[in-house]
Every structure is written in structure tokens, then in C-alpha cells.
Image 1 (tube, rainbow, N blue to C red):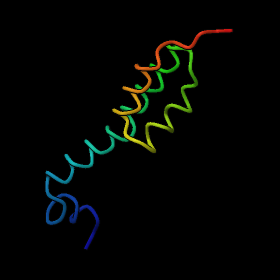
Image 2 (cartoon, one colour):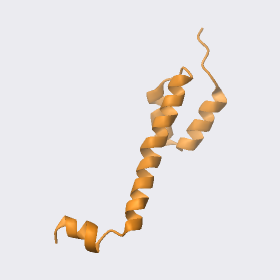
Image 3 (cartoon, one colour):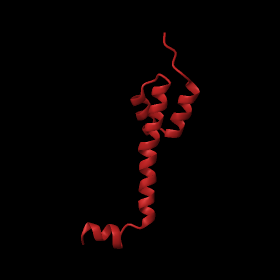
Image 4 (cartoon, rainbow, N blue to C red):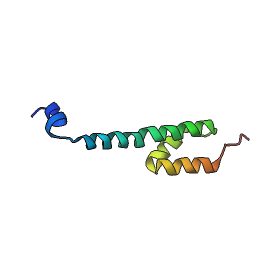
Length: 73
């Protein structure tokens, strides 16, 4: 069986494709937004990107908002 037949004809239903798209958005797009917000608030974007992947991206965003802007000393 060819992979194209499996993916498009017999195998993966359309809801699986939708699930994969939502999962990728959740795992990549939202942490990227968290990193951009962190950068705007004067914090390290990469650290917050990784933090939002390892914990929950929504929790990381709420924590970032609660911390506020970083003050330069």
C-alpha cells in the first residue's frame, strides 16, 4: 500500500488532520506569541518559548502578563 493511498483514501480521517493542525498550532504558534510578548516586555523570548512548551502556553502567557515589564537597573 502506498502512503498516498493510506493518507487520502483509506487511512487517516479528516478529523485526524484537523487534530494534527490544532496540535501544531498549540505547540508552535502560541509559544511563539508568548515569546514575542516576552521580548516586548524586555524578557528573554527563547526562555519563555521553551517555558511555554514545557508547561502550558496559556499558563506561561498569564504568568508573563502577571510579571509585567522588566525594569532595567
